[in-house]
Length: 398
Image (cartoon, rainbow, N blue to C red; front, side, top):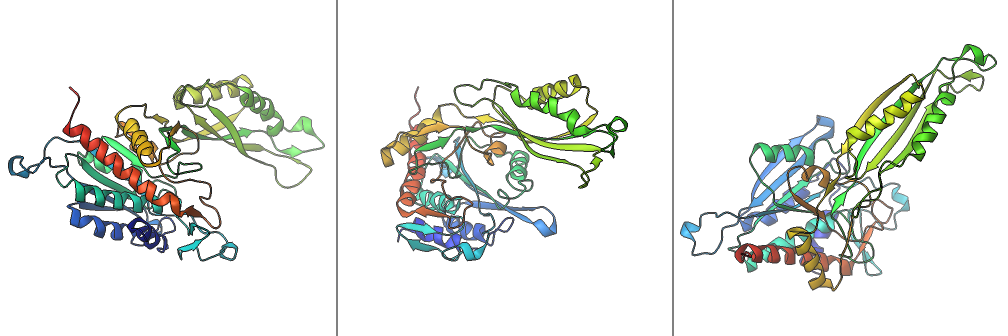
């Protein structure tokens, strides 16, 4: 059994359902401490939803003949991820206990096998192997871990990004270990993500008896033309990296439950997934212009869950794609599709952020699993990225 697989199984066996870390971060710190890492643990959130965050960093030193081995100007690469997992769902539907790592048919089963304890184990072992082979690396290495990615995401990575800014920590490159691959580890990299913004629209009417519509004002009838128009708007055309911005209704709530009462209000929940061609402020203004044109009496509350981010091909993207090609023979596809991740927070303080992890076909599902053949290649890719970035620091192009 490889060291990566051993650590993956050790982490899967911890019942770290969000926001619990269940000492996963302690296990990781114990592995990294002998390598010269220093640590900060930051807890956040209310007592009934306490979140554990870990910042672990090893500063680059340069060659052993440098003066007094003092730190030199370097670059810092951060591996970011989460130790929390989603709830298991009905236990009787699992073929084996979700917190007992189990092998069947060449696969490792367990909650977090794909999302994302394998990635975290691969981070750690890749760093161990790299430091053993390059003890005097110019490259500074960090791990940023939270137990709040699968929860509200209000006391995890977003808190740590503020903490890092206050403490003057600069991240140059970041790899988030989210499961991005499709068929084989390394076939897809997320080099950006769309922004997400939700709206809660309350259209006001006048409640009344359904037999006397002239004495009431039906908010559903009033809202429908505006909603139909919003559904047909082309918000933008996207670009070479992003799909066009999408607007979707997720819920409509109205009525008293009685069939003979015109409701007094209708509540509509909707969401934007938006590209870098649009801004949250512009989208808000355009929605409100449609509602105003239809003469609605309404309240509208917005929640911006994350701004879009994009890392164009450059130092990090090139190193990751080269590492994937060298280790697997795969030419990785760049993509910005899918949901959000904590990369949206890290991109605010780090200029180059990508996501790379194992295949995502079973994440959050009953019987979540990963193919055993996907585990070592992931570790090898992470290690190769470290080698390539360190080589660039030692041999900069004039």
